[in-house]
Length: 462
Image (cartoon, rainbow, N blue to C red; front, side, top):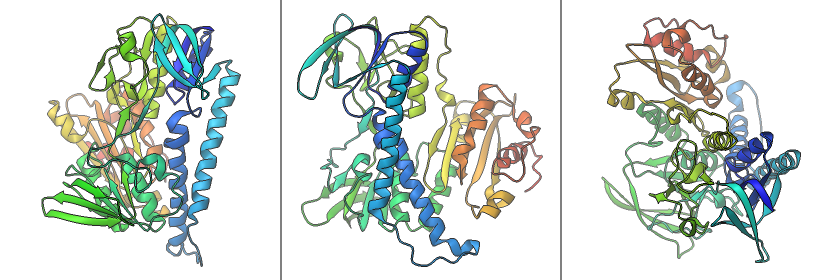
């Protein structure tokens, strides 16, 4: 029962850390209380993308006439859409099971808890507890849907993202509270298949972490698709005692009551740090997150933490990168600390959003004199041919040295385009390097080159 590393939690942080540790020749075990792959593979990133793909296909069919194709009698089969999504998630979870076997990682099913002396207690479904020891323990327990005092989830009428992926029937109407990635993705999905959707956002802009130009474009696109949007609005209470939910919303215009079948709370993620032994062992926590150094070591020797429970963005690819850095450091390698300002963010509504680095506002606040370029997809040949002209690429460079400060994209498939900018920034590529790099034609990715050229007064197709 002795290991080099025990990982508690098998999400994209935990299972990736376990595999990398095994590759480095360490004896590894991973503890999971529910399903391998964690929330991301089972109830987050992967199954939501399956739902969104179904919505995307249905939209293609309903707008087939725009492409010169006649289709009759199409309808969204909610049960089948949900079933497909769950099947995709199950397949991915089985894939992680295969990877655990391939890499000779012991999988211990149960709820893990830190104990003093580099030990982990695992309580199985039958209540029996077994103790394991390891030289190093990595906490990768992830997060869950955040609850507001005025918006307590009952799992039936007032739900979080998990229930939103497996409702027994399609609601006729839904109020989505919060317009971050989770909120707008579900708003897009349900609206696309025929549910009447209203988004309520507390701040003045939807997708508030994004560049303001992106926020304004998404607002226009979502409204055009039929979604009602209230910004600068606060949900004061929800009465779910009747057949429908009565949502009391306060805004600058006053207080009004919205009626709907389902309220989806999408107001963020809360780290899972309760009941995992932090207090008993003495691991320091600040503002609900475990305090770690640049290589994810806590204040207790042999105890590390990664993913949603530590500093940084609560994203799957961030947790995976942290897990790799953490175990490489444990194994005696010399990894670079993660640059949290070069993490891409993606939102998979339609149109998609992708961004990395500084927004224009943040770059100016940081003291940079900036060059900004923008290229609309309405001027893109590929976008016109695809019938996807909504959106643009916006790039921001330091005027003095040409440093690539940030990029913000909204449009079809931009989540597949953002990696070019992430790599360019990692390699310290300048604005003119992008301008002089030949991009293939016709592609959506040309817009990055054109936007960079716009920043330097050399744009051709505007």
